[in-house]
Image (cartoon, helix red, strand yellow):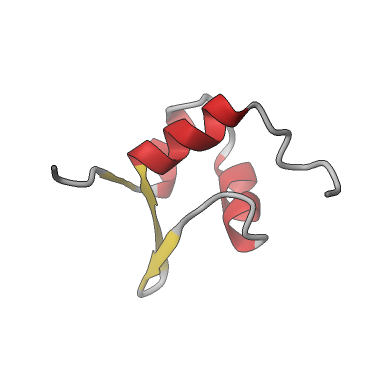
Length: 61
């Protein structure tokens, strides 16, 4: 099965979040992302898992 990669814009539109929030979560390691050159890419399945986990990414662990 092929992985569907999302850009930051696509990743932000999917859960209806701001791009700056997606950047921040990715930089902090709270949202799984891969950096390709200077651009972030997000695995759609991993984004689904993160959303379904129900964890508030901005809370302290």
